[in-house]
View (spheres, rainbow, N blue to C red):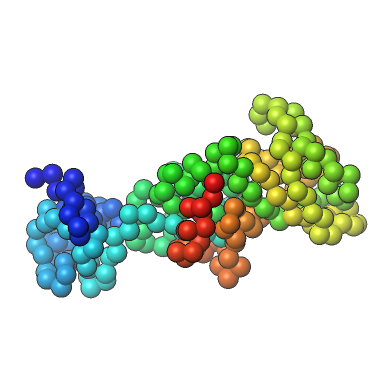
Amino acid sequence: MQAKKMHNDKGTFMRLDKFLADMGAGSRSDLKSAIRKKRVTVNGEIVRDSSMAVTENDTVTLDGVTVLYETMQYFLMNKPAGVITATEDKRMETVLDLLPLPHRTDLFPVGRLDRDTEGLLLITNDGDLNHRLLSPKHHVDKTYFAKIDGEVTPDDVQKFASGIYIDDDEGPAFKALPADLKILSAGNGVSEIEVTLQEGKYHEVKRLFKAVGKRVTYLRRISMGPLRLDETLASGECRKLSPGEIEALQNVQ
Ligand code: URA
């Protein structure tokens, strides 16, 4: 029987070991062994058959802890500096290593922050949303706070607003879309700014400032479309998005 292809009004059937494995509760073989050892219940009954057909609406526990089946998961992370925006890496810690377990095994970060950049990072398995947020067609605003080596001037603000032509050794030359630059403070050779970009080209914030002769010394993303960095999240922490935040993201056109 192809359990995973069957639906009824209760949901989509899948094997019990797959239900648990999808949610990151362990490897298929560890889970089969856990099920044999009576560590798993379905709707309050101990189950010993890994191939039992369950749906996302069944109540499944492993070692007494309920494992919710979520088809889509959305996490908001306050990315720390020093970890890379990737799903796995042999040597370096990735943002997925920071997620609390269990979580779905098919999650990925939406877009990329540099290793030394901090702040808002969305992690999900929603491929359609990923496409809408990153597609150049949609121009989803991303706002960054930055510290700059150099005094940012009203002339820079004008240049950013007109769209700076970037021609450096980091990639093909391009004309950046207009960016909204706000000077928060400038003096004694340093500045603090907020900048909102409509696109996400490689190292774009750093390259824009380099193009006007200045250097970014600290970078933190504070918003992406309707999503804002949650200031209650410590560096490296994450939380699930609220239903309202998910809805706001789904409405991004
Ligand atoms: N722009 C950058 O230069 N770096 C980032 O991480 C994000 C935007």
